[in-house]
Amino acid sequence: MSAKKGQAAMEYLMTYGWALVALVVVIGAIMATGVFNPSYLIAEECTLQPDLACTGHLLYIDEGGTPQLGFRINNGLGYNIRLRGAKIIANDGTTYEDYSYNVMIPQGTEYDIDMPLNELGAIKGETEKLRVSINYVSCAPEVNPDCDSGGPEHTISGRIVAHVEEA
View 1 (cartoon, rainbow, N blue to C red):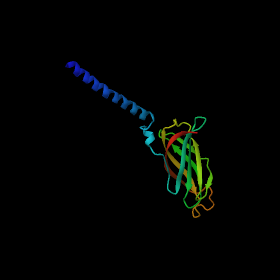
View 2: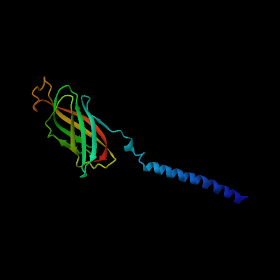
View 3: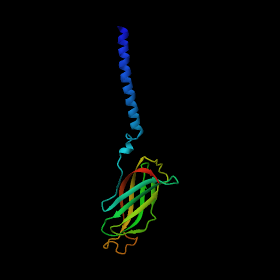
């Protein structure tokens, strides 16, 4: 009788053992697809201010291996502006600045800003969170009618969350 009890116990363990093996294989296959990767669940965003909006962005690694950030701003302020510069601050505190712009952006138009982020250690597929600052001079008729670069300078800040892509 005890031999029969042992056989029944072994059959029970083998049946549920194979079911557990199959469950582990399925969970392993799902995890290999990256569905449970936290960066997969983070939504991309590009936010500045409503009247000087970020309408698109792309963080990619170019052919030379340098991370590049490109984003588009839309001038909805109601008057022209003169773009003076942009500053990007990475999560690790590294700052990337470019104040060589002297570009007039007419009201209602868009302008693309491209900046190399040389020391950003970005890896394809990961998510990067960056802080952005844009400096511009107002060309409002009551403030700076000639729209020269000597008018008062304004700074707006925002945030970009982007998945790193390949060029």
